[in-house]
Length: 153
Image 1 (cartoon, rainbow, N blue to C red):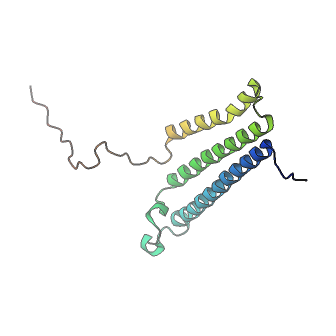
Image 2 (image 1 turned 90 degrees about the vertical axis):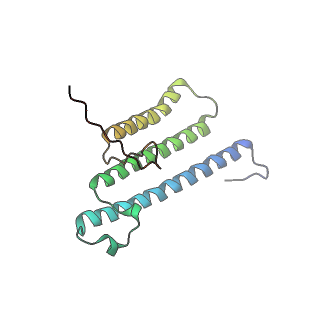
Image 3 (image 1 turned 90 degrees about the horizontal axis):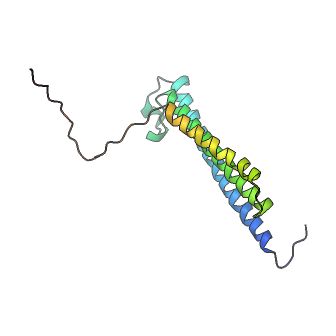
């Protein structure tokens, strides 16, 4: 490949697109590695040595797994993030290849991935593999509502 002394704007745009894609994919791989580490600790604490005390493992609170639903939820969320990164890469590559000339068929093909990812995220939200604790509207109030008995007629 022969490089010119004065690169054109398309070469700079390709380099920028490739740089952004590489950084996002590297961060995605880092996220996958963290989730695999979490998954490994979860499998260890749930199935291999469930009787081992949490203090003996010396794991931080975010790394403790108490139910298999937590592992399922994290893996499902990881799949959603991977699909989002895939969509970002496809969009950047398709804009690089076609420039501003986008046909409706190409746009529909590109939009298929985010629509299916959104439907998958909605299904994951509806299923709730591991329900997260609900936050109260007033986090500082310690009062609990006490129901009064109904008057007898």
